[in-house]
Every structure is written in C-alpha cells, then in structure tokens.
Length: 264
Image 1 (tube, one colour):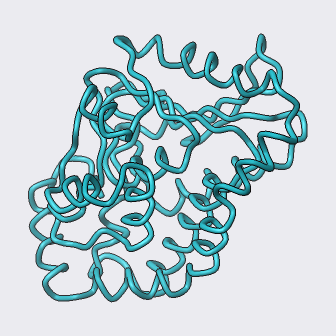
Image 2 (cartoon, rainbow, N blue to C red):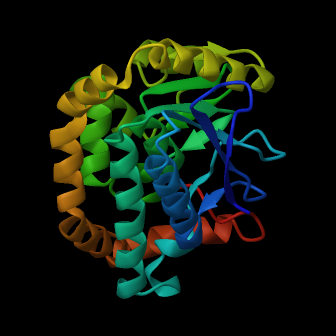
C-alpha cells in the first residue's frame, strides 16, 4: 500500500507512518485519502502519543509533491480538484493541530506538497543531501495562501519571501540555518533513530502539558485553516484553471513525459 502504519516494537507509544508509493510518492487524491484514514486511526488510538513520517522508496525521495495531473485543469475537473484540495487540507490541518507529537524524517528530495506536510510536523530532520521548499512559482502557479502563511510563521516573512518568490529548494545546512529543518544526519539509516530520540524527549513527560501547550500555540491557526477549506479550494481552482497556469502546466507535463508526473 502507498501509506502504512506500524507501531515501533521497542518504543511504547510511537507509530511510524510510511510512504511507499513507487517511484516517487506522488501525492494524488488516493494518496491523501489513505493518509487521512491512516492518521485518523493514529489519532483515535489512545496508546499512540507520537507519529514519525518516513519514506520507504528505493529512490532518495521523501515525496515528489502533489501529482500535477490533479492540478492540470484539462486533466481534471472543478469537482475533483475541490475534492482533492479539501482532502489534503483536512490532512495537513489535522497534522498541524494534532494532539500527537509529530516528526518528519526526510530522506532526500522534499518539494512542495511534501514540504508542506513536513512543515506541519513538530520537528523535521533531513539528510545532508536532502532538499526542501515550495517551488510552485517555477511551475507558473501561485503558492497557496495558507502555505505562504505557514512558511512565514516558521522562518519569518523576509526569508519566506526569498524562498517562495525564487522557488528555491535549499539543501541540508541552508535548511537548518533557515529553520525549515531542525536537525541533519549523514545517512538515511540515521533518520529513524534520530526521530525516535527526539520523540522520546517529549514522551517522557505526562501528555497533558505537551498537548495543551501545543494546542495554545497552534490551535487558532489550525482551526482557521480547516474552516477556510472551501474558500481555499475555490481560490486554487481559479488559479490552476487560468489559461496562463494551464499553459505553464502543459509545458511541465511535456517535460515530464515518460517521467513521474509530480512536483508541486
């Protein structure tokens, strides 16, 4: 399956959600639906206090981002696009405001939709050769409004402007300096142990303090994000159905012909 969850045998209360949709974990509607049901199951399980997200791909990729076919107006429909956007927004906003402690263990490339998922987590760790950013401007489409807001909340307005407007995909040390990631490792095999170590620093405390403090820090933004999903999906449809956006994505799809159609 594209999205699976398992409990760590030696670490009480920690679950790992793995993305294994070969070749690049393109995030289409089915991917988001699976992630939604999987994360809801984690939230509902009172024995789980923390979740680590990881990729199990053969390639050095966390996720290549949203499947462009879901955004290319001639390849989809207004109804499907809005369903797609509602689903991914429900997932992202629930991860951002979750009672659970969350860590993104990022192996390699993590553009756009994958970057957004990582930014919703409490902690992000990446390999030195990994890269991450919101690169929509390079595709000729605007970065969604709330996505811009979240990056600005994390790293500050001016650094966010520099990253977003230049469609940058910073790597390793630069990501750490920006504050887009919190730690770096040399090898992919070091990601999960490092993520577990971070998780254990939180889980050694009683849950009430962590959960309620997190809610105070994140709750208002998460609720506003979730409540605004209909307006946001309308805004995204208007953006991707604009003839200029269609022309830009036409060119992207031509470049990717015969290659995985992801990278938003």
